[in-house]
Amino acid sequence: MPAEVRIRVDGVEVSVPAGCSVAAALCHAGRSATRQALDGAPRAACCGMGICFECRVRIDGVERLGCLTRIADGMEIGCDA
Amino acid sequence: MNLDAIIVGGGIVGCAIAERLARAGLAICLLERDVLGGVATAASMGHLVVLDDDAAELSLSAYSCARWHELAPQLPTTADYRRTGTLWIARDAAEMGEAARKRERLASAGVDSELVSPAQLALLEPALAPGLAGGLRVVADAVVYPPVAAAWLAQRAVAAGAQVRCGVEVRAIGDGDVLLADGSRLRARHVIVANGCAVPELLAGVPVRKRKGHLLITTRAQPAVNHQLVELGYMQSAHGGDGESVAFNVQPRPTGQLLLGSTRQFDDHNCGITPRLLTRLVARAQEFLPALARMTALRAWTGFRPTTPDHRPLIGAWPARPGVWLACGHEGLGVTTALGTADLLAAQLLDQPLPFDARPYAPARFAADAELAHAG
Image 1: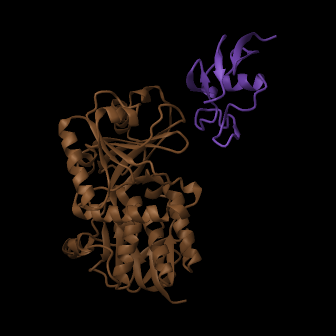
Image 2 (image 1 turned 90 degrees about the vertical axis):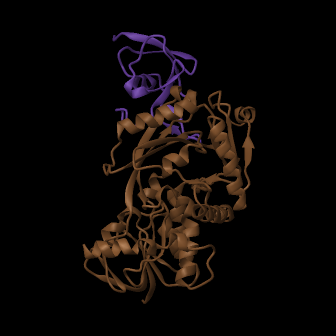
Image 3 (image 1 turned 180 degrees about the vertical axis):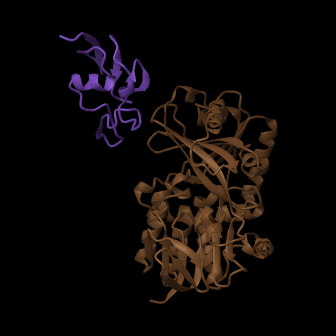
């Protein structure tokens, strides 16, 4: 079993593999979307390398790119960026 | 088919002229070498603003803004037309004095504005830094998304019978015709050159220089901004010398994003970001909107303003070449002035009453230079 960390996604606590990116952690947590377009359409990581900005999330209150941020134990992630 | 006029260039100016002339019943063909509104039009902010740096700029921009406001109910929602108004911001008493003079000048063109005290400024725009001296609020100014507006004008032209051909490059302008990249020629009584910074490629001696600018857009976030915010020192940056300059100019997008400008540089034809200028742009914006420090930049890009030596556009006949008309050199005001340009050019070409004095924009003011260029 790989090591896991505990994070909160929109207030819900989940376990995800340690060492992965926030974007990957959200997939592990069963979240298909990282954010919503203005019309409510779900958006998710497209390029995975910091170009498309579609995976932006709020991490501990600060807007960050999910694909370029490594997951850490206790992170509060908001999919409302 | 016999064409009355060929328009070279499908930016917002060319599209506006196509629409205007097609509605007047002329047989028109607009030729765009890439996509409609894809170059300076796409790179621009789309601020529909009355500028009053000189009387000519004031009459052209005030007339044009009025035309935009008339058209607004017909624009598609994707054109993002919004009456944000412009809030010109004064940092000190001297700039407040300039705001008062600006109010008088705008009033002379029938444009209403109101002086704003520091307390009112803080109420109108809570995100602005404390300690500013006030400003001038021009309620009627608006914003629009330029590439959509350009494409919409082209659509109206087509609906009125115009041909619009994209991916067609004009290689040369002949006598009563144009030479296309595929070697064929297209004839028309009039050729209207509206291809912005590319004009000198087709007509030697037309004094249009590229003036590079940067824009940056943030993600959707606080702080909320309600008006297009421009520092009163902007005009000094826009019309000042040939050196680099930066001025605070921020537009709230309907999405909640902020569009940040502005920079100016001559003699840099590289379309890549110049980090030095982008850094100055952001630093300048943060002086006025401190909360920007916590925002995320989504994209930054550059564009080139087609600039003339006296910062006024070239609208009218080009004396060096009979049958050739110019509608270019609008610098940073081409979106605002596209509709006035189209009306002024159409009135001259159709020999109809002019909507306002055409002389300040007459390309003939540079014709002597062009003769020298040909002779040289």
